[in-house]
Length: 470
Image (cartoon, rainbow, N blue to C red; front, side, top):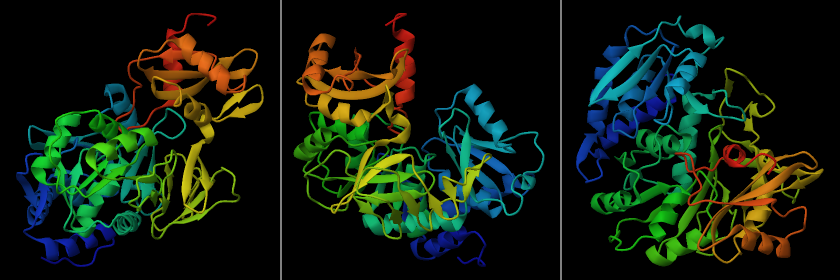
């Protein structure tokens, strides 16, 4: 099946994939049952195109499908009609959904109800005037540094470049089967699972079940060869008993949040496999990857730049980097920030140390705690807390202080711990100004669906529960 060359590079890449993958399995369910061949994705996309005739080209169409098999066909249909997909996760509540749809003037919302595609049209003017020129091919939603929603504008060629860099760097081929448990609506899942299927013919398993036992059973049943996950999955896997055999699984990838070396070591000891750390950002896709097979884990290590990615770093000390690659997005929408993103470069909010071995994440500029004029990196305190007997996990954040500007607080998960004992350990091993003013003991530290821990959210929760004057 052939099509005339299209200005959308993803459609061209898809038609090339279709030509040589055709009747091959493309999407499986967690039991290993076939959901779509590559040809069937194309047929379903053509059906959906007819549902979109009433939406003006250039309009934004929000897509909320969970981790279902219909993502590729919906995206292909939208691109054929010249529409701009805005992938949305299932985590949005009604208020967040209304604000998001309004902010991006979405002309429609596409959902999947009991297997039927529904196009919920919205009363907004034609969308082409939003762009002041050519419409983007995709909007990636990102929270940014404020609570207001904003997105990153991408052209299809940038998404194709990201897929190429990831497949080359990780060695993904048409012989692999991706296990799709990370959200397809998020940049990590979109770039690591959806795009490789479209551009490189890498099949995937579509699953909505994120329970660790179900994931392991799905990996065994499907014979998946690649598992892109987040640190919490590997932590849970390592703590489980009665593990299934996973002879086909050749590649485990962790991204979305820092991978503690203790969790990585426990997983490798139990499963006999390396966890390969992947570092990227919504604004530019993949940045670096640990392709080595050695199992000597180091906290913060995120490998070396992916093929095609160039980094600028001014010194050997931790600091910001500038990412340049063909995958970098065009800018934010609706509010631009040219100093951070634009012109083929992106400046992440992370602090990076570059060494002969590779890159190390040492924190985020927004996480630095200002203690009476001194800059405290919470990762330094967390590293020391990890050495405290009984501490399983620790996250440090800043809270307002009338006398010192900010003070650190430690949120800790552990076995048989009390606040006084943890504070004594900190006082013995940290400088007074680095020592947390309080230790907040919890059963579990909440993470987002992307596997990230939000320090600002933790600080707000802590202050809401702390008694006045504490």
